[in-house]
Amino acid sequence: MIVKTFGSAIYGVNAITITIEVNVSSQGNRFYMVGLPDSAVKESERRIESAISHLGFKMPRTRTVVNMAPADIRKAGAAYDLPIAVGILGASGKIPAGSFARYLLMGELSLDGTVLPIRGALSMAIQAQQEGFSGFVLPAVNAREAAMVEHLEVYGVSHLSEVLQFFRQPDSLTPVHVSAQEHFSVGQSLFDVDFSDVKGQHNIKRALEIAAAGGHNAILIGPPGAGKTMLAQRLATILPPLTLQEALETTKIHSVAGKLPGHASLISKRPFRSPHHTISDTALVGGGSVPQPGEISLAHHGVLFLDELPEFKRKVLEVMRQPLEERRVTISRARSAIDFPAGFMLLASMNPCPCGYFNHPEKECSCSPGMVQKYLNRVSGPLLDRIDLHVEVTPVSFSALTENREEEKSTYIRERVIAARTLQARRYAAYPGIFCNAQVNSQQLRAHCTINDNCNQLLKDAIRRLKLSARAYDRILKVSRTIADLARSESVEVPHMAEAIQYRSLDREGWGN
Image (cartoon, rainbow, N blue to C red; front, side, top):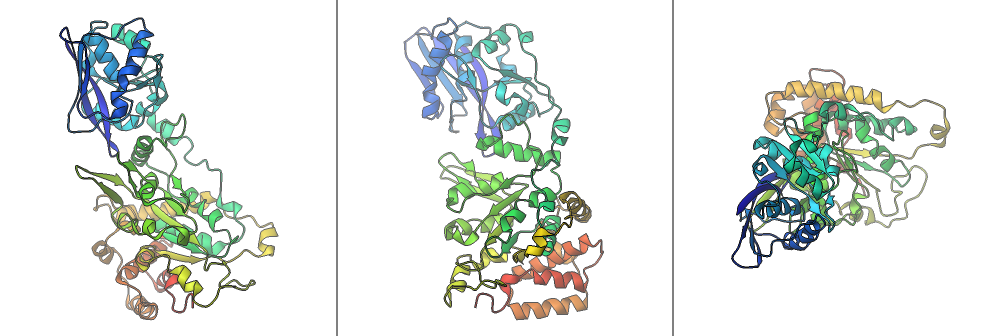
């Protein structure tokens, strides 16, 4: 007897439906599994045999063939245990198989029949809904995540016995219902940190406000203890809230990577990722034998913070150049190529020299001549070109640390950022996928960022003096447009352009000499 059940395979951050055909015949006594399964899938025979025996059934001792189609897609992981087990029980007549075609089944089985969590539940649920499945049976731990998808009945189970009872009596399980909008709204503005915690540093806060308002990449350069990391950790608190669509995209990536926080069904706040400088290029951009998203994809719609930028391996930093421009990364293999989204804001920090005290107002730099420039050269010019704001961070004075002045809260800064982003969303409404100034290309920039003669002369002088590249020229225009948006100005004026030019510290002639 041939029975079909349905599972799902993760391909990138999306899912592909897998048809699992089980044929139990009277001829022979061997178990065969075909359809390009990996070792974990092949080992399911022993797990399924033990789980079935705990329910009082026996594994068929006749010829059993399990085919997983399409056969050209590699099946990886133990999450196929549940659909294979149900298919075997259905093909051997232990449970009725008439309703299998209406449901997607996924879950890893322990030896006693307990259903264990899986990765990528949200992607699978979206694909199941698109393909017209009535329901999705999966581990109870993942049920709320999958229930974010509308018009799909999601059933969370903890044991194989619950699944068998469900196919005998469909009303034995109650679908899990979650209001995506209600769940999404809770906690969007709850942060453990706030800009009001930072004393002084008003010019740095202003630069980060500009970066947030236009989606610009930024680098903070300053001595140890100046507050670079503290400021960086608070950038996410002033970014506009995620939209529901952005939250679903972000959750899909984290779910596929197995990085979804415990008991969380939807990521409602912009991610902030801060990998250590010992990270490999594969861990940063993604990859592996079974390609998985890296840190730049986990930071999608959020912030990627690289602390102590020159300490990262040169090769690791260079692989970011293309994703910074294209907002996605392509992982190519001999038989396939997978795209992962990578629309993140890059925020980096670094010391100005190996000892950390170059240009310090009080402490003397102990680095020998040439060491400062050699240290800065660890970060390539092409990468710095892709960073819009170069911001010098100076130490906070003792008087600023001890004064009782109340600092501006993130909430108020965020309101200004949202107002500027709203202007940009209207401006670029005709361009799909463009929502802020940092995302526009050169042609769109020329159309929406016209400057007068005075601004043009100021920019011309700056480019000649700083010897800027064409890419840096575009960066200054984008930043000046963002500053004008924060000021609610229709056009870019000289003060806006002048402020944008000053955020090119590392391009200044004589820096590091």
